[in-house]
Structures are given as structure tokens and as C-alpha cells.
Length: 360
Image (cartoon, rainbow, N blue to C red; front, side, top):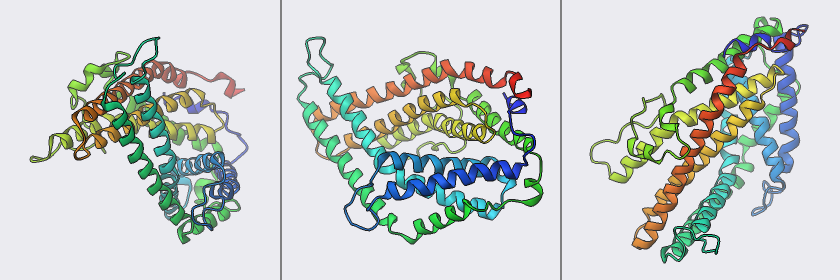
């Protein structure tokens, strides 16, 4: 796995600093082009929406790639500057991703409920005609609309903040000059390959620790009865303390169960971005990223339904419907893990194999 970057076609005449500076200045330029369109008039006129969803996606893409390069190739950058920039980029990612995340969650959950309650002649869903379905749908729609509105309000406030203007100024400077460590930047471009190998190696190590036996079937619903069997990874939710409610304990168990897979997605992204810096193909990792993105969205959607089911004074029929939708989302979590398990061996062997064309 970690042998792959030794044959990545990095330009041999370039230095590490030149390769990274070229990559970051290009991404900073993309950031600065997308920012005005993504923000639109929202920063100046209260209630205005971002002008372009595509521009917001472009902005997030640039931010993630800059942050990924600063993480993987940290030794080449001024440490204090790199850490502060990464912190600010993470803040912007979290800010921009909230509202679209609630929109996708609403589409996913309401679509799932509608499908389960469908009564077409081709075959009724298991909730077709259930008295709790309309109330459950209204509850989910109301709660997600409120959460999205709150996220939009927070976005509007921050788009007028000095913090965003300071980050834009930082990107403007980055487009012209990248703060590099002179000695590391003067190294040949191939000195970036061990750091790329480390990113791929971290992904491989995390993948080896995943509970593959739990993902051996396309719909491993039985796995939900064995939560907590997987080894605890750094960053997972600790076991619930004595006195916590059954719901809190269940939420903690599911969060701990999901954590290694969510971590794997972060490492897939970092590996992708490192390969991009080295001008190497990352198509297979992109597919893995999409599968783990589906895993994360299903996991988040299930958590949203669990929260809705604890709304005070809902009827048993409504609670039942929400329970069915929750189970549906958890089964999609299991299905995504199965898909990842089928793709990973092929991807891993491909990354470990020789790339003869790179040595031409």
C-alpha cells in the first residue's frame, strides 16, 4: 500500500516548495473566485440566500484541498501559520456544510418515509396506510426546517464577520506567497512522496482495524444487536456512565460503532488530496469517498430520527413510524459498509501495485 507513491509522476525538476506552492496558489485562487458567488448578497442584505450552490460546492472543494495539503505536508510549511490556517478552514467548512447537510437529510428522510408509506399497486410499503405516517412526516419536516433555518441564520451572521474577511485576506496572500520552511521547500519534489505514502498508510492501517466481520453481508441488520463488539478507536464515544438513560446509552453505542468508519472517510479524503498534489490518479479513492459519504449521511439521518422520536407527547403510532425509519437508515449504514468492504481490497491492491508508467 505505502509503496505506491514511490512511482508517482512528480515533476523531477521541481522542488517540493514549488509543487506545493503551485497547488496551494491554484486552490486559493479557486477559493477567491467562488467566495463572492457562494456568498451572494447574504453578507450585506439580511435574508438573502447564497447566489450559487455550485459556487458553494467549489468553495468547499478548495477549502478541503488546502486543509488536506497543510495537514499531509505539514513539514514543508511554517508550523504556526499552517495550524492557524487549518483551524480557520475547518471553521469555514463546518459553517458552510450545515445548511446543505440539513437539506440533504430532509430529502433522505422524507423520501424514505414516503417510500415506506407508498401504497401503489406495484407493492405497498410496510407503512402504507399507517396512521402515524403523516404525523411522523410532519414532525420530521418541521424539525429539519427549523434546524436548517437556524443554520442559515448562523451563516448570515458569520458571512458579515471580521473572521471571514480575515480568512479571505489570508487566502489572498496565499495566492501570491506560501509561507514555507526554506530547507524543506528546497528539497526535490520526490521528498513529498514519503508524506503521501504516510497518508496512504494511515488509511490502510485504519481500514485493517475496521470490523469487517460486521460488514460481511449486504444488509447486516443482525449487527445492530452486537454493538460495542468492535475495538474502541481514538475519538470514539466512551461507554455511557451509570445513571444515563437507555436512549443516551443507545445513541452512544451507535456513535461508537460508526466512529471508525467516519474516521476512514477523513483518511480517504486526505489520501485523495495528497495524490492530487503529486498529480496521481485518485478515481478509486473517490468512489470509496462516495460510499463512506452515504454511510455518514445515513448515520446522521438515523440520529436525527432518534432525536425526533424523543419529542415529548408524540403518539405511539408516530413513535412506531419513526422507529421504522430509523431502522431503515441503519440498514443503509450497513449496506454502505458492505459496499466499502467489496471495493476496498481492489483499491488497496491497486494502490500497492507498481506504476511502471510513472518511471518513464
